[in-house]
Length: 476
Image (cartoon, rainbow, N blue to C red; front, side, top):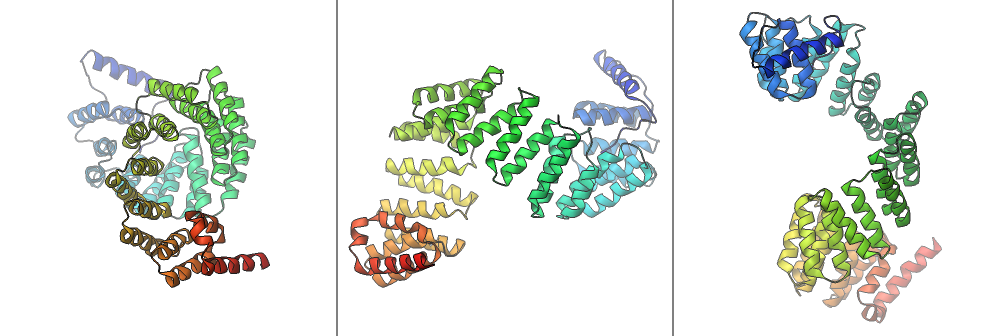
C-alpha cells in the first residue's frame, strides 16, 4: 500500500516534514500542507500504523484539497489503513483518479487482495511495476504479488515473485518463511535448504537466514541439524532469544534435558530471561527429578508473565506425578483457559478428572477436543476409557465405532473394540476385529495383551490367532 517516491522528497526532507507536522500537532496549531506532502506523510504513518494521525491528515486533505484527484488516493489509504476495503474501493473507482500513478495501482492491488479478488490484485500490482520501471519501490510490489499467488495456491509463481521481492525494507524472516512454505507446499522441502544456504553464502552474518534454515530442518524433522543452525545464529548474536528458545524446546523434545539446562543457563548468563525459557528450564528439571527447582522456575516464569500457560501446565504436570489430582486440575484448568487450543492440556485434564471420578467434566473436555480436532485417534480412545470407567459399555463401543467411521480402520481402535467384544462374550466378532487389527499393525499387540494378560493369554483362540500373525511377520 503505497511506496517511497524518492523523486519528490528524500528521507531527510520527509523527516523534516514529519517533525514540522508533529510540532504543529503538539502546539495545536495545524497549518497548510500541499496535497503531495499530505500524501507522503500518510504513507509514513501507515508504516507506523498510527491510525489517529492518518485520520488527521486525511481530514486536512479533504479540507484543503477536495478538488485534487490525489484526494481519492489519500482517502483510499485512510480506509485501507484499517482494512476497510469496500470504502477504499469507492474512492479508487472515482473517474478522476490518476490511473497513470503507480501508487494508485498499488493501493488498488492491496484493496483487491483484502476483498479476495486476488487475480485482479495481481493485475493491479503488475500495472504498478510497469509504470514504476526501475524504481526501487518495485521490489516491495514483487513480494505483494508473491503473497497473492500463494493465496491462489499457485506456488511456482509465488516462489518466483517472492524471491524477486527479497529486500531490506521488510522483515527477512517473514519473506524466508513464505518462500519456505512454497517449497514445502510443492513437496520440495529440501530445495528450501539449498535456497537458504545460498542466502547464507551471500550474507554469512544474516541471523534471519540461519534461523530460517534451522526452521527448515525442523520441518524436515532433522532436529539435530536445526539446532546447529540456531547455534550459528547465537554465534552472531549471543542475545538472540528465539535461538535459545528453539534449541531448548528441541532438546526437551529429544529428552536431552541436561542440554536444555545448559543452553538456558547460557541464555541467563547473557541476560536473556524470558518467561518461556524459565518454563523450558523448569520442564527439564522436572523430567530429571528436581521438582523443587522445577516449581521455582515455573513460579519465576509467572512473575515475568502471569498469563503464560506453559508455567501453569508445568505445575499441573508435577502435581499429576505426585497424585495430587485436585491441585493438578486447578493449574491445568488455568493453562487451558490461557491456551484453549492446546489439546495436550485437555487430555491430561480428562485423565485427572477421571481419577477424581468427575466423569461428566471429562466428557465435557473431550467434546471440546472433538470440536477442535475430530480426527485425533486418541480422542476416541479417551471417550471409550471414560465410559468404561462408568461401566457404560454401549457408549464405549459407540465412540470406538464413531472413530472407525470417521478415521477409517485404525488398529488402535480395533484392538480395543476386539477386547470389549471378548469381555461381552462376542468371541467371533472379537476374533474378526482382532484379526483386522493384526493385519494393519502388529506393533499394537502388546498394548492389547496388557489390557488383561491373564484373560487373553488363557484364551486358546486368541493365542492361536496372535501366533499365526507373529509367524507371518517373522517369515516376511
